Length: 216
Image (cartoon, rainbow, N blue to C red; front, side):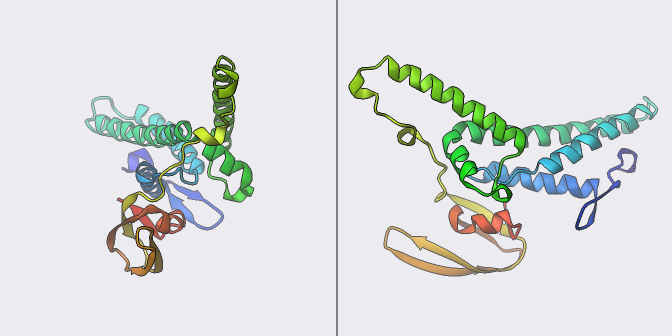
């Protein structure tokens, strides 16, 4: 939609991308996040880019004739983009609230370039964990002394990385090592480009994060 400036280009350190390209990338990130058992590296820069684009698109709509039937189509497209952004951010918040201690522990032990939370998400996680810990401690204080030895690690919920996911290979993956704990054996498989598979999440997690596969 040219009127909505989805052909506008953005300069990055590596390449020039269009707003439509950013939207497609964000949509893929949203689907990966929805279908992944763990929280994935944030795409805050894509969200910010599309938020700025929404503002520009709204300004462009104001300049159109209100009787033009395209106005409603453009507004529907805006609503779709807003839903995508909101759903993506909500999914990440839900994971933070489900696995707060696990995520915060991982973030604090990771190098800055390996952290998955955006700065605002990290701040939210710290505050959430602090509030949960305070509430948990207040409950323990009201219990008999013999029952106050429970620590955070005993109640820490972790994502199930062994759950199976449906994926599509974007590029050829020459080697994926699948471990079978039940009979203590391993299989090595390759994923052809554009092939689809149902596999345990853990062996393909790194390939998902580096863009070699996507969840569907």
